Length: 255
Image (cartoon, rainbow, N blue to C red; front, side, top):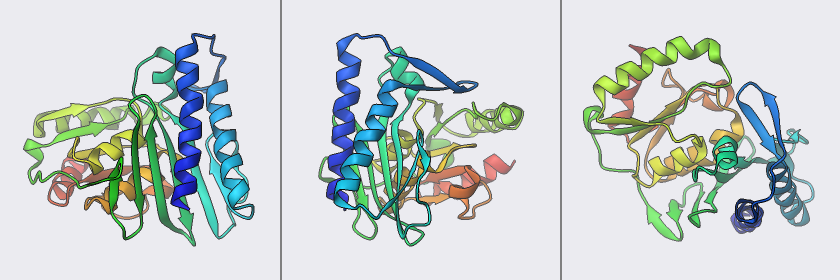
């Protein structure tokens, strides 16, 4: 199943790379304020679903552009064909394909593929996390004041901006630095491989988090919602960090 996910992600990545290089005009449509979709998103998602359906015709899909097709299925593929669409539109090279596989309610497989850098992050439950077939672990950071922390703005829920601004101020004061790159799945993959020590964001969708969360867990990190519970896939609010940093991150965000 992981091999099929990798094949689907690479196929979608090829579509994204061709579009980024050919210089053709992007057809951009606004789904809501600050949330965009292009024909590349749609083509990449169709390629992923076609690849998976050929191998597993009875599986369900929860995908950003086409929505839930069969969420009641025992196995559901949770797909973001192009996480970081706004970055892609502007030629800012921070975007990825994200594919998570949920089996009987639990995350089982994950692929996050950065087509621009040809970096393939993969994980299967109980088998560790990998970057281009090399085992990766979260960093050894143990202190929030030494941590580089990733974040994302709540751009879909501007009503929460004031709360987020307070969190950002607190983290800028209590960490060694805060970065906002604009692709949550890739941020979570960076926590898994040690490029970031922690990450938090509010108002995400399941396809933004599914693959990245499993990557962090399989790399030895911890993932929770802002209360330290496990409802992040439902609430959309997520924190991920090294085991020693997560409690301090949660304290700072609550404060």
